[in-house]
Length: 141
Image (cartoon, rainbow, N blue to C red; front, top):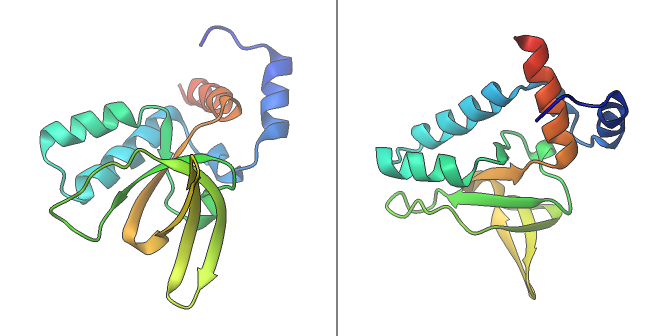
């Protein structure tokens, strides 16, 4: 990103809905993503492929990071032999059920749920988050 306009930075911080991102930089976002993918035991080639596919995403290590209306991708941990990165969907709501937290998603005309504890979830970064991460990354240098 080239030089950022101060007005654009101020607008980005006003629109920010995930306060936890203010503690991050691009390097930290990449590190958390990569550490998560390594922890689940992906082979080297899959690790590289998924890091590339998740370039504009951040790992959601807390349910409070997941926001309604945002696009997510996930890897289900239910079957260790099938650790596929799912195409993704939009979050419609977080549900607290008897058997745990569920993320209700919609994709095209389909509504479904994924169990939060059984997935590694990655949320697409917004334009405002990109701006803020650029500023924070430059300040850290």
